[in-house]
Image (cartoon, rainbow, N blue to C red; front, side):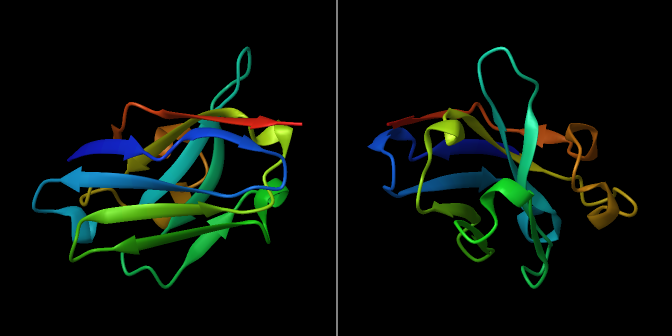
Length: 128
């Protein structure tokens, strides 16, 4: 699976952005997916995850109620809708996918080691 993230940019606090992740490979519909972010000088951190079917989602506490993760398996796309953006959301955002053969993939959703494929990242900058 190859992943390509896009949609980042510069936005004022309170604004919105939609990140997209385009996937290639025939197994996309069998991969758990997630978004992570990394701010300068900090470790990469979990933002959101979505199950293979799309019925299960999870978010880190700081984005709950503001971000929404979704996926379109037919188009091999994943999205992150970000509303009410804050300066502390500034980071490079990465999309990630789990191997279809990974066992207990949903249990592994929170950590970087729970994912097998990574996109190149897209910069999100929120000004105050």
